Image (cartoon, rainbow, N blue to C red):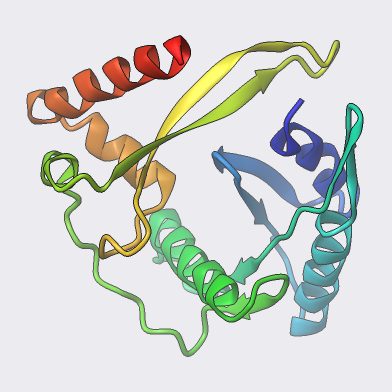
Length: 193
């Protein structure tokens, strides 16, 4: 099984009953906390997430020591879209990672970067695409049922894009077909090696 499979029950165990936990893709999760009366609650929840997610995980015969960075975005603006809120939380999370990881960063005070269009065909031509594989595991039996192939941009290739933004670019229509074909060919080549 993968760390991502283990992470869901671990994270769910430290959240309040009213909180919502979801997996965005790959190793990114989102926690939605409504009705937060003050910052102390956010600090408490974030601290519990850090404590639980940074604990060693037993997978088969191996002990893994995962790390986690938490990005927090607060809003009291009913007009802010979920996409905008997620983008701000994602930027805060990357700020936490760049600052050494295993910490909480708040979106307040961070400049919200404007959305830059993602040109996957140009990234493919520049050799900036990487394919990562995530196991698909049965929660009942722990059996690996298959894998999910996910595209990522190579570190240092420029702007950072969340996995969901890459998926949206792949669904953009015929202009993304060269990248889809490369993804399939790469997966076949990886299976053969």
